[in-house]
Image 1 (spheres, rainbow, N blue to C red):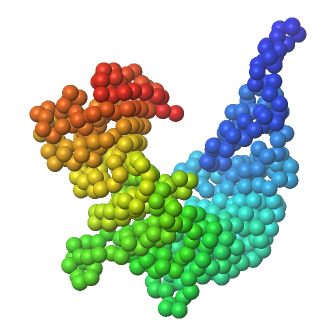
Image 2 (cartoon, one colour):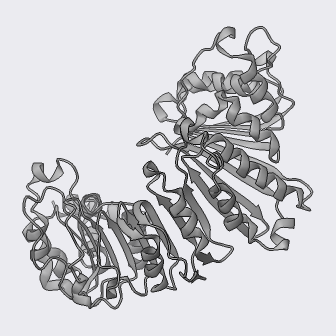
Image 3 (cartoon, helix red, strand yellow):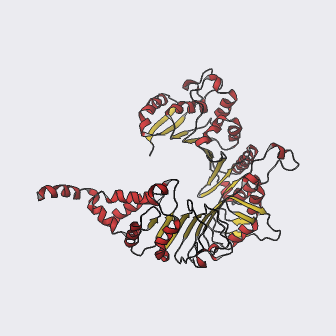
Length: 522
């Protein structure tokens, strides 16, 4: 009987993975768990790993670094186990109920949750807090406990409470370096907003752009600054000094475009100085026809400011070394605004930026500016990579977007990611001649074509739409203008693999296409 029990155990112990040192096994666990974005999924994965075998259970339960996340979905007894197993290490506290999740599992309100873990506030390393579903008013002592080791705060003020009278953490949070606030109008002069390395503000109201500048002035070591959908009512005073942020690597300035606040972004950029390595993303207000008729309102100076801020301050060596350009189109599912992203490469230097909610003339201006940069380049061969995501793929059917692409370095790489493709199985009359002419000329030098998460029935249609000869009577592979396409790469769902193989055979039988690879999307 003993031998029958020990034999499976011996076989289990003989597996290669059980011969790994504990340190390496623990490293693998950490890599797997690090991929989980939420605490509930994190602990679900821990339970899965713990159930594999007794050795894994032993290693996991005795590794404090795996027990440093405390979530509101965990029961009271779970809090005690986590605090015990974390063995004095700093912990990450997370309360962000998902729609319907808390009601189903009896998740406590955040006041009860914070009370349950308040005994360990000295060990808090990060706090992610959302106040949705809370039925009462803001507690009197809300977020006023001391947090000497807190490094990161994410606060989503779902109840839109007035926070201007709250001194966060009683002014005692010396290690706080990262703040993300949503709908939380705070007292900005307090200690919590000094010496930050990253600051993200979403749907926050300010009296003046100058207030935001004052916040950044108190944190000269900022590396990340994001301002999205924020309201301002007053312009910068004339005597406002410029703010220098030499360590800034990422800047997003998207003021509330529904109110036409491009002037706020303009003034903000005029008063912010950053290194040439800093990326920049902005939002432009849509301009209606009536405002275009007004004197001086037809041209928005912000696109010019964007180009000068992002590209104009680069060194002569960077300009002369320009060799590649990556252009991306995506469409925000929430507001249908097109997001255009830019990345220029010059040796080891990379210049990144993006514009959301632009007019066509704004896009034309930026692309023309970039083309002028490439005219200074001494690189032997320059090229463009075009990446279209979601509804961004629809630009292939619009000559207003594709025609400006002729002005930039030739497109040699095209990538479509989860494309929304409304025109399937086109008839000759379904493809206007102007579209075919525009797409053919824009992609005449294409060498690599990558499709990710694409519907099998759309693949040939996309190839035809890009390469179809406008003079042909019927859209077919034989009528495509393809000199030589080096590589087509397809990434599809596993259940669609067999169906796509038929399409792959058609492509592989075309002598003008060099290599066709088919992968299962992970």
